[in-house]
Length: 255
Image (cartoon, rainbow, N blue to C red):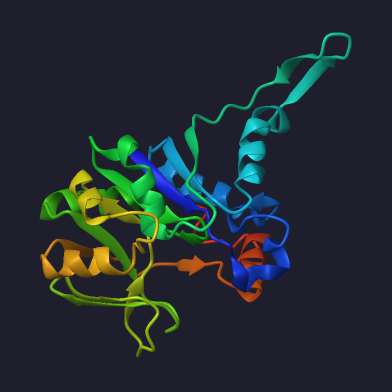
């Protein structure tokens, strides 16, 4: 099963970092937050990823092109440029890195990946959020209800979009509204390929009309996650994650 990670946004609210790198490459504990997200999925046995790149996507490409040698000791013969790994650390990830456009919206990025996702159930999350989520339980929940889509609902501060849930079925999905305390979109989605029919081009916003149509069709269910969840939307968020990591108290470090 493939996991799509949206990595193309401008990250304007984290400008201190994103003027020189894409948000998924902003580091927590000396590693890009993208690395943390990949490890969450890998812990639960998922190793195939599709990264939807956009803003400064070449930095993400360079990171993974060099990942093997940066993670290992090696000997290089300068006469011919050949390098030989001396101490091997293997991480069994298979990653498709796909340029989905500089200004493409979230749904549009997924739409551009449709040929890679038509055959099987797939997962999707954002390239800036971590959680101590049990992916196995998330997928079991999704398979049991047999609907097109599952969104993970979380309960942090009320500055994101609100999800209203009635007996696990989503009955309202409003993105970044002024809301009372309640459930919000925490990412960590699961979709059936049929969801691709709800998308219609680069200007499509995943959290807008596609989700509203799923709700109208009774096809969006919520997996309620009561544990830790935190996105890295601002520099203050980055500092919080960094503090938790440095103290050895990072709840998302489940690997």
